[in-house]
Image (cartoon, rainbow, N blue to C red; front, side, top):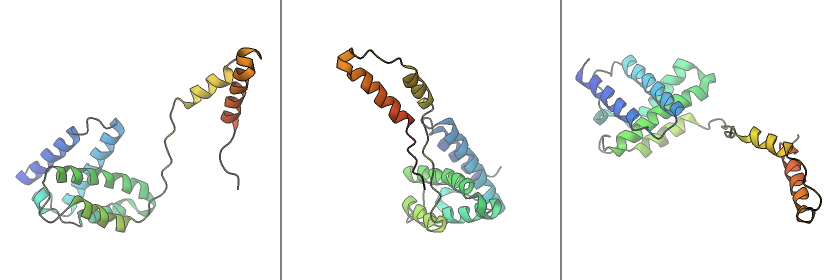
Amino acid sequence: MAEASLAFETLKNQFLASLGGKSPRTYTTYQTGLAQFRDFLQARGQLEQWQPALLEPTLLEEFYGWLVRQRGRERRATVATYSSGLRAFVRFLARRAQLPSGVTYEQMRENVAEVMGRTTYKTPRIDRRLPLLVTHVMALSEPSPEARNGVKRLELLRDRALISVDHRQRR
């Protein structure tokens, strides 16, 4: 393995080791994204001489274009996911002052944002405990009408009604 290729592997491993607070899924995604970046460098014949000091401001958009050609335009979510791994790696290099003089992470991020365009709306994650809460509230027995002058019963009925309402708009 050439020295520059070794430098890539070393920096990649340092970056991945810095992800201690991230979820296992994020770690895996970034790892896969960087494997794609390695393939990108290899396809361009640049892996052996790669080093952070040679990064161009157009790197992220060139990588994005390569991924689109490899994966296809219909796989935009996959391409965006793998691109995020390289963006995080470049941000890591910027924090460690490894980028060439005159090249900034912000500049690279803006360049790729222009190429990527607007991405699809990402569905918010739903807390997995939500069904447990719904089941719990629906299973509660109604308090007696005398409990806190009937307020407890009304609160329970209100909570059940709110849980039962379909909040999606009908068109």
